[in-house]
Length: 418
Image 1 (cartoon, rainbow, N blue to C red):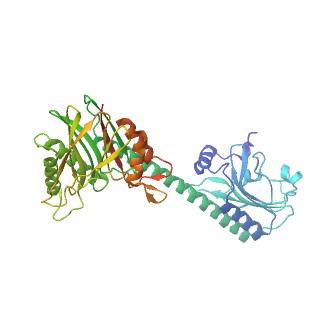
Image 2 (cartoon, rainbow, N blue to C red; image 1 turned 60 degrees about the vertical axis):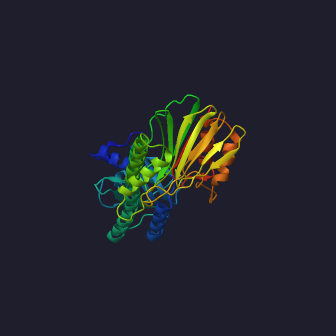
């Protein structure tokens, strides 16, 4: 039913926009507002107290004490009349007050006799509704009582303002989070190869799982071809955000450039160590890099792997029967000290075997408060005992399990001989 035109403000479209701004209509009951209506009923010794919001064609009750109704029509309505004024709107005896005597709430079953409503006024001057008190008996209402009702209406409005500000803060934080995630994704993508090279007689697959999508981590993988060698690296640079991104780019560039002339992975790591130290400041060793580096070349059995490590978790050699062996290679993290010594091992990768390299975020993920551990990782790989893609799928299953919380980024690369 359309509201009576006499009860419509000239700025009604703007007022209704303000109502929508507070997003209060049809929200569940709320203890904060219920306490105000209980307090108002007790303070003014009336049976009914209501926090009302005047909508387009209805008056909706955010809180109602002493009456079991959620809303009434706007036309006619005492609350609709009350929002026309900036002061408390008082009807001491509705039976004799020309403003209210024809109202159905007065003449009907409810038998309303007394009404006082203080407008809920926004900071920019729009009346959303009222805090009103109602009685079935006529009564006097002093200026002091009217002022007190306005104060209580101010409490209601303060609560609405606080909630509006909270929603705006959350929305702003969500927007900032989305922007940070988008920036982090773009920057992280720039630190990983866009495509992996095709290798005859081999298959490869990768995994990257960020612990926080809004933060750029230092975990990376890389794979490229130099002459007859396939160079593979999985590493973890200390730090987060811009500093980690810069160090990750530096580490990848060092490995890619030195592999053009180095005799093998051990020599590449010596160059990486020197590069990281040049980038450090004084005795600062907070910027360092752990990495496992593999040079793979075709052989009559499949591939020959030359492996070196700078303080990185051992790679796993998995065969078609599901057996996994840790390939431990000694060496400190790159960037710790000048005279770092690195070792190198040589391993045959035969048909049906896969080498799996990963960062420490994988075994250090937590399940029920304890570390996932390398045992659970190996168990997952043992169950699949298949291709490089199967191995990566198994690792993804570990870090995305319902009981697992990833506290650090996870990067992994699997390379299998066909």
